Image (cartoon, rainbow, N blue to C red; front, side, top):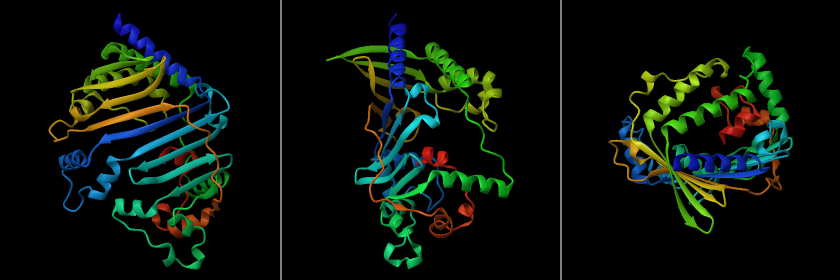
Length: 330
């Protein structure tokens, strides 16, 4: 009875999220430098390719915040219904990068100096750039820049045409999405053990525990009959591919406030197996957020200037991505 009741409460909590017009998520990597270094050592990197201390420190304190506002409830929204989206990556030392899409423009800013240190490739000083660098200097300085999403889409289409590449694979249609969700719920009901605990003041905790390998093996087993409806190139792993995945039990702790989902915490430390990891988890906080707005004083960035100047190089010599790609990669 508790299993059924807890599952229904979670279902209703997620349904409430879908009825909102503005929604914000904050993803927090709950780990430390020692644990990250231990995971890196387990992967046996080549000499000189170990994770830099600076990168481990930044990653351990990283948070990703995403806010979406739509004209319609989120569950009924398509890309054209979105009024604004915003994504921010921050660390304990401050904001690392931020990206917003408002109307026909995308706005970007980043702490290029910190990102360069993290990647082990320091960026040049803005003072060292020639005058023709233009708005790229603003990028180096960490100022807001903007570009037209319509121009980006047009450049991406021209790039595909010039290279003879096809249009991007279509996204999942609504019918397939519903079938995927149904398959997921079926596996969760069968394999996940739910428990509830009251926290007072309208707060309730629901824990969901399941053996990791069993859960993902069963999940992909339910999805395989739907493979023909998935976008081309989206291959599902076989049971053989998953046989070496750790089968330790993983627990997700859902926090509900007056029936609404406010936080999810997943402890992943047991999946590290032999690595000396003491702290490894993910925390997702959910809220209404604030409406994404266009930052004042953003400098218009010419896309050709961006491609041929600051990001010059064979990997970026042709526009191969669209505004929607950027929206999900920031």
